Length: 231
Image (cartoon, rainbow, N blue to C red; front, side, top):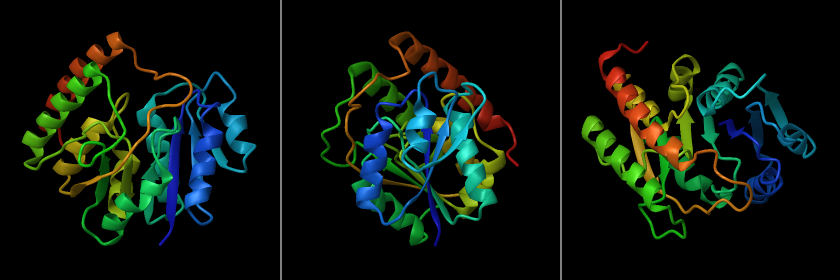
């Protein structure tokens, strides 16, 4: 079974070398694709210099467009699974099999790695914890199953999920909406425990003000998702 690791990256020049090293250390000859989302630094050069395939978006389109670009590449190149893996160093390559195995075993169409199902060194700030709790509670009620980490971007998609998101993927901050759309399509979701790290270099692209805007915007977007048809 062919598996592609998709790394959406915006201004991750400092973090990418250690991220790629981690992946190559823990996986045997991994297929890795970096989607450079219009970075203002040398993200593209840092990835290509390590021998990694890079797709450069013309300007900063947002995480949704970057992830969908990777999933579209996976679909066009007939991959069986795609792994969404952050370029900021928070995701750990030694945790990949935790989320990949349930997908390979056919337990779900999308498997999400949760920071809150195991004892992890990851510590979110209070505002971030509040947002995660809010969205996880909302998604749990809609899906009818417990979701503890609705904003986690550490995910595995099987071929059915790849095909669906190839043409149906939310924009901006899509993690929460993607769960809703996948559920509406009748595909299945499973959470598994993973350990994550704190970002080691650079800073998050989301400020405190943007976090409040994010909560309002995504809550409204979910309401629209609930009434619109999915293809």
